[in-house]
Length: 313
Length: 313
Image (cartoon, rainbow over all chains, first blue to last red; front, side):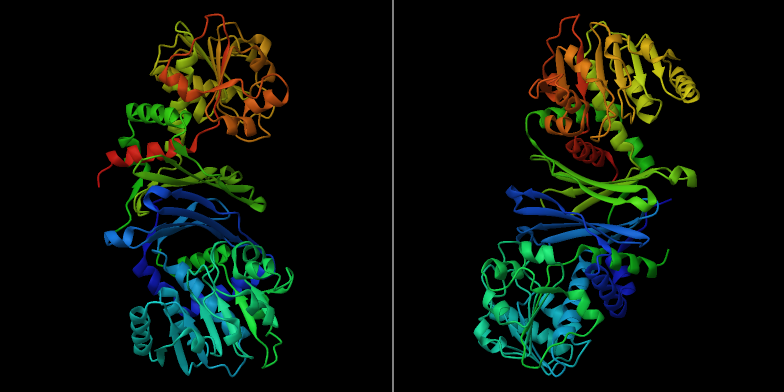
C-alpha cells in the first residue's frame, strides 16, 4: 500500500463551501454535546529561528478516522520570501490505526474551518435584520470571514478596520471584486456595525465596548494564546449572551478568560456555541451578544475525513 | 514544491547499520549532555477498537531538522490479518518549518534505533570478555538486539528464552541462519549468561536476580509504560553501575522506577547511558551492571534526518 498524498489544488476542489459548512456545523454540535476527543497539543519551540511547531489531534466519537495536524509558524520566513506557516494533516483510521492519507493542504482546511465556524456562529447569534459587518484585521481570516458570512446572509456594507491603511484598502478591493460593498473605517465606526468579527493577533482590545450598539453581535476569532486579547472585558459585561466554542480553552486563553479574570463575566456565564447551531438563540433585538472562538481540534478531524471522502482514491 | 514521500524499501537501502550506529551513538551523547528537546508526547485512545496513537516530537539543538513521529497500535489487527503497528515520520526544517519529507517507514527506523541503542550500550557496559548473550522475548527486538550486538562484538552463544517454545525455536533458526549459534533456554540458564537483553512487554519480572552471575551485564528495553516491568528490583540492588537512557522517563515508567519505588536503588544512582558511549565505564570484572532503556525521542529526529540526507532528492 502506497501512502496517498493530496495537494492543496485537489483539496480545494473537493472541499466545497457546502461540504465545509455542513461538516463544521455538525462537528461544533458534536463538540458541544461532548462527543469529541481532543488531547492536549504538543509544542516545540525554536527560539533561535523565531519559530514553533504545534501538533494537534482530534477525533469525533464513532468516526472512522481521526487526524493529526502538524502546523509550524516561523516568523522570519516572510523576510526570506517564504510563507510563515506550513503544515499538513495526517488522516488515520480510528479502526485499524493505518495512515489513510496525507492532506498536504498548506493550512487551507484550518483556514476554511475557522471561516465556516465564525460565519455559522455569527449568523446564528446576530439578530435577523443585521446587515452591516465590520471586520477588524486585514489578513486572510478577515477576508474569509466576510466572504463566508456573505454566503449565509446578505451584507449591505462591510467595514474594514486595520492598523495598516494600505492593507485595509487592498482587502476592500478584494471584497469589492467579490461583489461586497466594502470600505475602510476607523475603529469607532467599525465598532458600531450590526455584526463585528475580530481577526487580529492583538494583545490589547481592538475596540471600545462603549462604541458597540445595542442589538449588535461580536465574534472574536484571533485570541488563541493567553497573552493575546481582542475583545474588552466591558463588552462581555454588556453582553446578554456569551458563547464559546470550547469552554475550557476560552477560559484558558480566549477573550472570555480575560473577561472572567477581570470580574466582568461569571466563569459559568457562557453557552457552548454548537448548541446555538442546533436551536436558535433567544435574543431580544436590543441585546448585545458575543462569541469567543479559539478553534476546536475536532473540527480538523471531521473536515479532513469529509474531504478525503470526496477525493479520488 | 511537492511533498516527498519515501517508502520502507528506499529507507532500508539508505539506513546502513554504520549510519544507524553512528547517528544513534551521537544522539545518545547529545541527549546525555542536555542538547536535545523532547516535549511531552500526545496520546489518543480508542478503547472500542483496543487502539491508541502516540505522537512524539524531538530535536537535537542546532540540527537543521526536527521530526514528528506518529505511531499507532491497534491490538485486534492481527486477527484481521493486519500488522498491529502503523506510523510514519515527518521530517520538518528547524529553520523554516517547511515539511521536508515523509518517511513512510512502517516503524523500521524506530526498530533500528532501538536495536542500535541496546547494542551500543550493552557493548559499552559488558566486560570485555563477555561472549554469551541471552535474549528474553522472541519478537522483532529479540532478533534485532542479537543481530546488532553481533556487529559490535563476537558472540559465542545466543540463548533465547520465550514463553512460547515454538516462537523461541523459530527465532533460533533465524539467528542460526545469520551465522549465530543460537538455542532455546530456560529462564534460569538464560539469566546466567554474560550479557542479557530483555525485550518483552512483561508486567512481572522475567528473570530472578539470584540467577544473574557476577560480572554479567543486563539491558532492559521492553518496559515503556508504568504497568510494565521486566527487571526485578533486586537486580538493581546487586548492580554496581546503573545506566538509564533518560533519567526522568526511566524513573516514571522504566524498570529503574520500579527499583527506586521498591527501595532497591537510590533515585540518583543512575548515570546517563550516553556518557558511557563517550568514556568507557569503570567496571570491575566481578560487578553486575544494568541499563534501563525506555527510548529517547531525539534519536528519531537524528536518525530520520541522517537517513533523509542519504535519500535521492
